[in-house]
Image (cartoon, rainbow, N blue to C red):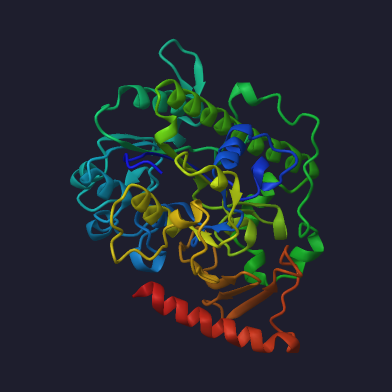
Length: 449
């Protein structure tokens, strides 16, 4: 690697499943530009959000802290300065980086940023701040001065190109780009509104139905899981074969629109002579259920909701480390310490994630074999059962702790990757269930400290 401080381009989508990339083995979706980054860098097929909801996950990505530690999600008090002060943009800016944010910061509620000492906090974090928190008021089709419409993904791409051209040349940069796509446009019957350039994609494709989408499977679940927000949103998106095909194609088209912007960014970096010294990270805030268990959206601790795409391309690595696939459990809390270490900045002791930097160059450090996951957001109007659990390399343990008695689920992911058979009551799995109950308690104590 060179000794010159690298630029960092951090790209994040909203609600993108871990399997919604060509390099993830998806035979339908078209993402050639992100796939090329994976071919030049490292792809992490075992990447996860520790809390599958936008605001809390984005706070974890910024800080490297678990939800129970930074204590932020929608409708909470503002995110505390003690945590934003150790965020990756704050520390990179202190170290001399020119930092920027284009898109959705996500630390907000009802269109209002929720940060302690908002103006001072943002000034500490970003030299360039172009936040799209109010995108839902106009949606994806933004009216231009001449009366025409332009897609928000295209506008985001244009703003990134402008940043790359105008930023100070004497400083390394860290630009965080947060696409609103492929998040559905709530309230619009089209749901997934893609850029016009992607309208033609997937016309002849048939998107397969999820393995656990059979109505009999849903009917077998306890009542509190049958009457929640995930089921409500399923009715608007995936309740018929026609809706499934229309909305999944729209979802894929939106991701392909983002991929096209990634290609633009790479071309511009190459034109500017910066590509060989710019690390590009691509991920999502959390995954998305597309009919599994009769559900839509995120929040719950199932694989479609927890898994995220993760590609990191560091052009400074040697040839042997390019195009590698790392099977370690990589988490959203790992992203902040990774960017800090790659920039040569000391990671604060409070940070709970692990830097992925050693994995990018082929090293084999001791690594986690499990992780704690949680979802705590709850309102009277939006019914989402709170839960927490442990995901190991083989097993998944989930507990809905507000139920009386506590409702538990246990899955052997090696034998049952679609989480169709709850083994909680199986005598042969009693020892594993006890072990994971205790491990969940142990990890909970750790993440809160």
